[in-house]
Image 1 (spheres, rainbow, N blue to C red):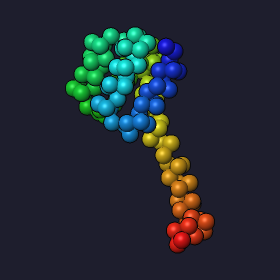
Image 2: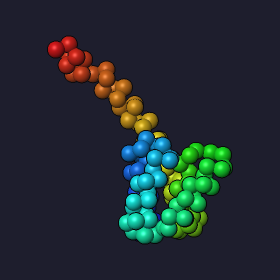
Image 3: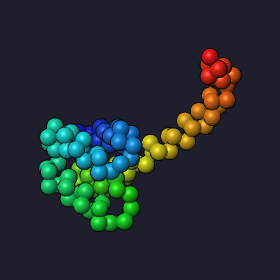
Length: 111
């Protein structure tokens, strides 16, 4: 598994679980432990444990996973894969505000 495939997988799971870190564990287990076998079960649980005993977001254990697989660059890319989807929502919200005020949308509500 390449670093970019790992980042895409993490970002996809982050979007699917709405950023809920512990919910991503079964998805990551299926793909990283059972599927591609790049991690062992113990490594995945170790990364999760580190994140739970340190302050910060519950889903930052993916930084540990990235570090285990690709060192510091993997840690940075995995962290960005967790953080960036939340920032994508800002322009989407701005676009929604324009769409909500459009005459086309308001006309469909009155029908």
